[in-house]
Image 1 (tube, rainbow, N blue to C red):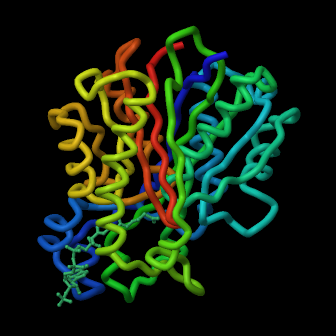
Image 2 (image 1 turned 60 degrees about the horizontal axis):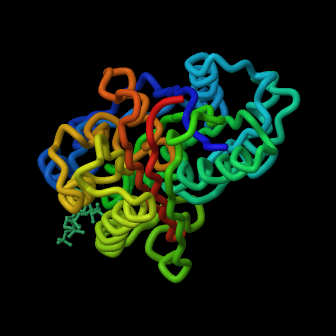
Length: 311
Ligand code: ACO
């Protein structure tokens, strides 16, 4: 049984924080942030909206888009590194709120590659016929673990959620190939140390450029496809320079790369599904389009998927 995307949803907090707003509270400039990262603004959740609230909103939208009811969900996977609390898991919290009574539920921790890990976990259960509908959510409230006194990291992140219902699709469609990987020896370059995120930006940058390009090419190779076959690249939205390097590695024109980093910043596990929903809503994805999704993150972790769109 092939596994594919049956529906998508997203949630973004209303509050917009622009680079000009950050200039007022730290030693930075709109010019520095835009030229180094491509970020112009980000969404930040108010204190009364936690990770599970954003996950619930995105999940509700995805179920509606998929025309699948909560009772039909067999498994819920939530990719996040910023849960409301260590347990109960975010998956259990939204299972109750959605009324997904028969669903098993757990969280996945793979930082910005979390959505890729969740999607491939879902695929395994669907492919084997064990489960039919799996709800996956990528969600972060990174503002909770951002040190607003550290300009090296504070300008990069945003809050948000993206969700997908993954289920059986017809032959030739859905997930064609994937690659997941990890290198724990690089964990020191990007981590939550105490309360806050700390990062060696240059090391992460080098790793990301190399890994995003290689993983994208590897999934094409595994599926027996070529760079020219790709209709849409959906890279993790961390930094426009990293994204551009991946696009160039695949030899794709700008219009074939999903881009939300300028308006939402880096939303970690939420960035790939959010970018995918926006492409879908803009009518830019057609039946049988070949989509390559690729992410990297703290761990270090990475993941890429080649997917043929449609049910
Ligand atoms: N405003 C102004 N100046 C700044 C800022 C800022 N916000 N941040 C850093 N600088 C300064 C630095 O202090 C440094 O000054 P110095 O030369 O006097 O020491 C100077 O700018 C240049 O710093 P670099 O580190 O060389 O800048 P670089 O071009 O590497 O860009 C960046 C930094 C944007 C962080 C880049 O390295 C990057 O994008 N790395 C990848 C980060 C990433 O993707 N992280 C997300 C991982 S996802 C996850 O798991 C959450």
